[in-house]
Length: 190
Image 1 (cartoon, rainbow, N blue to C red):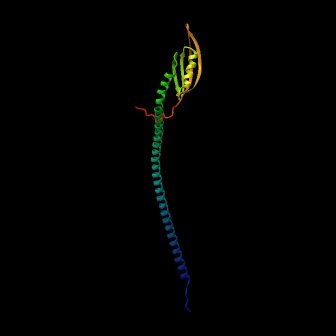
Image 2 (cartoon, helix red, strand yellow):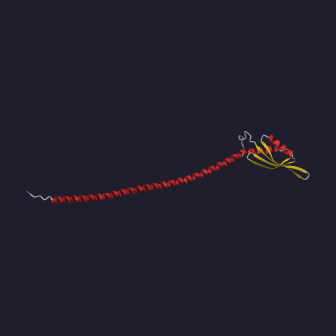
Image 3 (tube, rainbow, N blue to C red):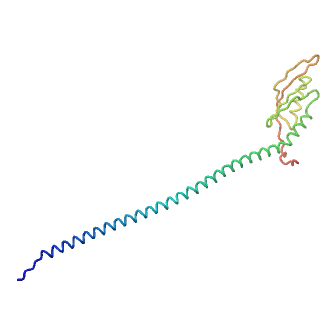
């Protein structure tokens, strides 16, 4: 029988498999490093891209904030202009009232009554004056009460003072000015 030695073949096969295993492990290690490098490169690219988007969003937000600030300023300016327009409209609508106030006051003022001051707050009018007697103040109140432009006369104060042989009554009178219907329809010239 021929003698076959199988030991060197097994040992060569074991060395070959060990070599293949080391080559495979080295290849896996190199492939792992390459894959890890590619993954890190991909993540760094995605991070850079996201940073670019974030910086663009920050720039756009700054532009929008500036626009919002400008819009707020314009809104405040608009409110101020509307308030001015409202005041001008109120003044325009009250122009005829002042004329009627002075016209009616001269018509209703009885003889012997002199006004020293007049103050108007809204529809409330305060008259200060001097009368020859307190009965003249009563006559003024009756005339005001019968007027279509005035209402609710109320005496605040009547003081009788003597200056030499003459006596006079100093008075403070409050009344309300009535706004007539159709007064808004009147055209007021420049």
